[in-house]
Image: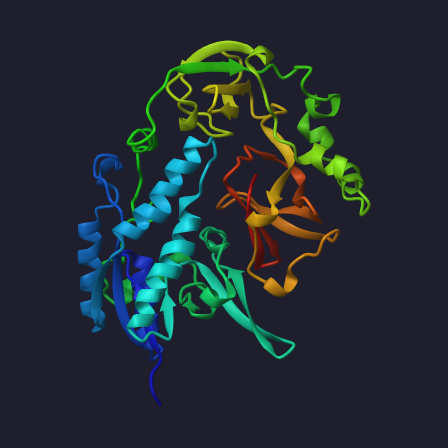
Length: 413
């Protein structure tokens, strides 16, 4: 019987190393491939992700496992699809998630196509997530499931994958806990067993975001304006303590099956401020360098409570802030996703117009899942949470789950 061929994305880290090791043990024909992506040493912090060292470690792992090893340079594609995307999003006052795009556009597109040229039946990565398949109406449906390690589950980063991409994906360590992965690496005598986990931008490492953005987005002095928590811009309901509004009866009332479109728009609206709505408390060097929910980098002191960014206006170059993490402009119960930005991993579960469903959802990696109700309307998808969400920002991704299974996702408007 001919062995199935798998191309593993060897990053030079312990997770992908163990993924390759397990596949060899399971009898696959394994090829290791290292992806070189965009890299700029001038904005990387403390040489956190030196690609040369990572490539060498990946090669040593491949030699240890006795598998072929290849390097592939995806710098051009990464620059076009990820870096330029980041510049564009920040310039327009939005907050991108490059890791999600990296998986959709690089690992499971460009890299997948390169693997196919090598005759691969599958591609494998060191993600902490799982995949299975169910039959529905005689058709195979691939399911993306959360990783068994609750501290490392990376399913959120794969929330934009398609059925076709999932059909060729393998996640060998998805059923394991991180300590188990390191123990396997030690027993297999892999050089990456004790290597520190990489952090920061996908395949680039930790970056100095202002330095990174200033490559294309110039610094521009502007005003920092504080919006008072008692502002008449907020309804009495919004200005109350968030916990008092967070009770079950309020949740049920909002989840009325016949809720009006006006009510949904009220719950999910984005606050829009003008200079006259607050007072100037400082200066910044560019509104596009800030994002909703941000606390660090404002350099404004002397306040009873810490200042948080509650909104930015890149046209007027103003950063709006509010005191304390319970500020009504910082916490919202809902968000909106345009029709063109809705993505269903489970295409068979696509919601119809005027359909309502209850799922669990998150808006950022490692955030605990929160009960949420989804309302599909002609205008798009309205997502209303059981609990207030802090720092919802346009450009980020919301992902919704049914238990362990990631059903779909969307870009927040």
